[in-house]
Length: 204
Image 1 (tube, one colour):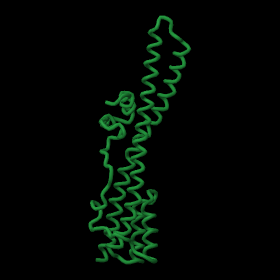
Image 2: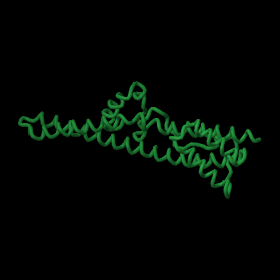
Image 3: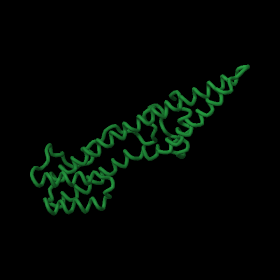
Image 4: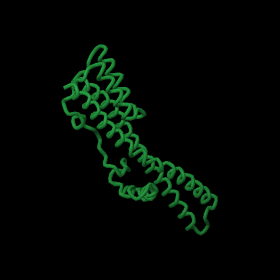
């Protein structure tokens, strides 16, 4: 386990029993969920994606739909309604729906990569804070072991430890949400792929 990992592991227990199964072999990935660096559009879409999207009015409509579908605040039922309206206006064609999915995939995959990077930075910052707490505790113990301790320094260290521990714990409470977000984006992509493919197949 990495240096400072004991404090991090202790804080992770606050998130529940599943969090205790986290793998500490990669200090930049504190999540229980398996880390998948990159998603594959080919595993989600039943046909090869077109190399370029439609042009003209159809292209503009496809861009607009892709931008809408990439928004997490647009629930899947609303997404299905938007796709149906798009298919009715532009035609039920798998190549066209594939172009839309390709754009949605690029948007959400890029967002997911940024989130993975953010989780890594978050984890490293927690490790650094954990090590700072450990160092302060070691110094406080060394002071107290002296025949004539510097009690002013001990008081300052104790105050620093309390403050840093509070920050560490407060941050750790966000780890469950952070770790779930990449998976939620992946599930959304699969669902949108199914909605678009269904609309495209109806025309075939």
